[in-house]
Length: 257
Image 1 (tube, rainbow, N blue to C red):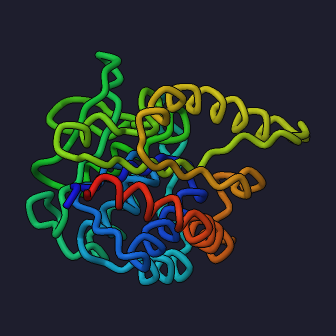
Image 2 (cartoon, rainbow, N blue to C red):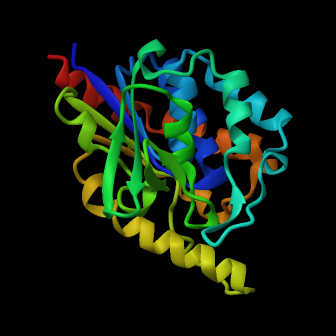
């Protein structure tokens, strides 16, 4: 049986679509052995690797006002502190260590000083999640063992590399399609558009290395703060994968001959 790994991209609220993707793969009988994730993909991947069903994670997101967990950061490096999310993760994740997960998980973050990617797969889980989610300027950096980390998507928003040594089949789940009908309405929209294009650029070569690649076009109409549209985002991810059922089953069958 071919070993399957899945890489989950960052994308703010659009990352909720990964839950639909994971649920659809479960329903199709696809056994995921390894997971890598960055930013929101790291969050969804952590819950899944801990054995929490995707639909249960969706209900948690809907029941939680994520914005209330972010308080202003009185500092020169960020506007908000992401550490407030720490209590949420500790309360709802079954474990706070990579070793306690039911599936192998790798989370990436960016070492701001060295300008390098760092992959976490050992030790405490929650600090690695927080580091991977720290969007530049918006959040204060997360310090782990004296090193300052920010959003993993800055350098690698589709972390397939840590999956390649052990997985014969790599699935890429990318939730940031570019809206071809984008209209500039305000500075906030311009900032998100700019970040989206910059981050997307580092995924183009990586997506070519995936045996199976998901990028639901319908996600282009959503923005990173659309947490109140969780049901829609989940449904988009789920239906997109189910719509590719024949292709998924064909590729798996070819690798399992």
